[in-house]
Amino acid sequence: MEESEIPHHSLTYGTSRLAPSISLVDRAKEIEMAEESVKLHVHGKLEIIANQIRRLKEEAEQILEQAEKDIELHKARCQFEKKPGQIIHLYEKETGTYFSLLSPNDWGKNPPHPYKGSYTMNPDRSFTEILKS
Image (cartoon, rainbow, N blue to C red; front, side, top):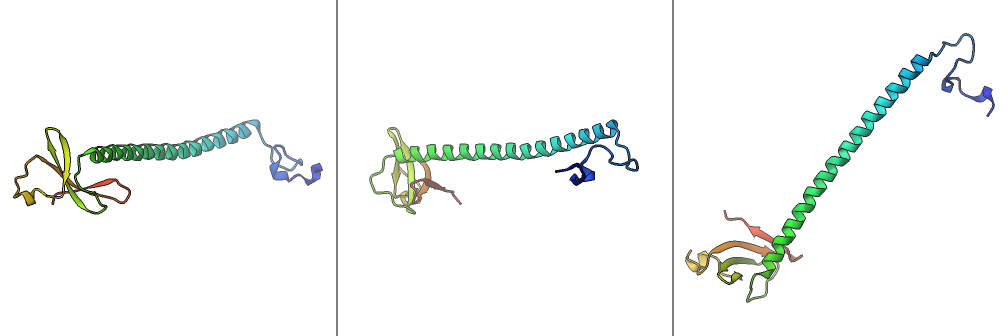
């Protein structure tokens, strides 16, 4: 590309005597302003990414906590086949926890062992606690 083909606005110096002069101070200020603008822009993007990482970390912790609970529930003794969507009730006795198809109400609100909660097993074999209303 010949010098005459270079766009005049991209040059750092005047191309004719009538062009305004560009001082080094003005150029330095322009570079400084551009640098600050880029820094702010990058900082904003990195802050968004950091927040996303924090949310993903929290979500991963929740998933791991739920998996631990599900594993513990699967360890409870059970004398029947657990089926997805079926309501099952957890009780605890001295030898450990067990599932029953009988709710505390079925026992006349006086179950033989302390009641720990009611659950349904999901198709993926995780559990959902049924909250008491």
